[in-house]
Length: 311
Ligand code: AMP
Ligand code: MG
Ligand code: MG
Image 1 (cartoon, protein in one colour):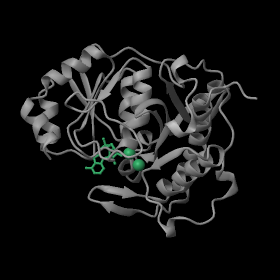
Image 2 (tube, rainbow, N blue to C red):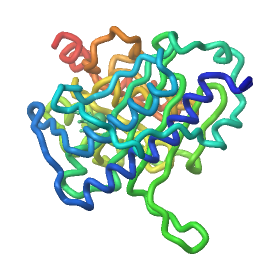
Image 3 (spheres, rainbow, N blue to C red):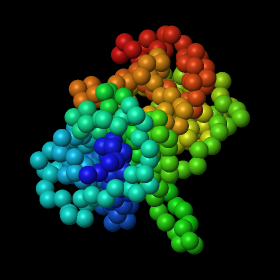
Image 4 (cartoon, rainbow, N blue to C red):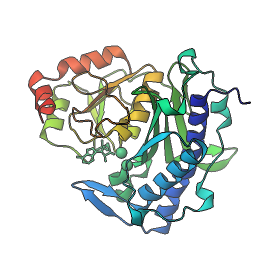
């Protein structure tokens, strides 16, 4: 009998399946037929979003049939059909399998877990060629809290033994730690990261009040939290209802495992249970530590908080 706690196994499976989904994202781009569908204003879906989600959901549900999995992309009948057998991944990442599970998560059962999947975060950037910004997000929540997650970057380039390798996978488990990247301290001056493709006057107002030395505009919630994890920015501010639970679940889990904090712009944590509404209506405020989070929160004017809360 396996002695690895379920939550660790699911995280290890998520790392392996995210790698496969990342390859699908690259393959769709190399073929050049993106199959872009407009889901709403400034909201697009491509063949890569659809296929990567099928790969992730089919793989996880084949191994964990009682798991509740919520993916960004709607599964309409024309979206179904046979899944290629090589999209079903049953491997478990060996390094993650060895992670020591904190006591409070050792007895978690499949029924207690909701997995939030953003098969391709940063679709605007993907279609515009900002490929570094693209990530695959798998967030694992228990009792409504994000406790583990994966951010995979399909286009991250490394040299392994003199050979070019594409893709890397960052993971985190609350109470256990993070892996897949080298944590770095925050920059000396206040650098804020925010959206590059979904701004509006309220989003800009929330940036202006921060007194930042620089604003780093990049795509995707996953990539923005990576800026925090790797010391290129210290705060992520997005005063807009545009992000959804699948955008923030994995990034929040990893950031909090690394000592950071992600809330809405009022300072409340989002809940990730199966029946919550998908939009993060009151925006996103994340920081590398509690002190910077409190500072950023204190800068947001009450009327701006009210504007989002009453939308
Ligand atoms: P961004 O910070 O603009 O790259 O967005 C992070 C995530 O939230 C991406 O998945 C976006 O698609 C989503 N998002 C943010 N704003 C909007 C919006 N106005 N409409 C649709 N999706 C949005
Ligand atoms: Mg997204
Ligand atoms: Mg997406």
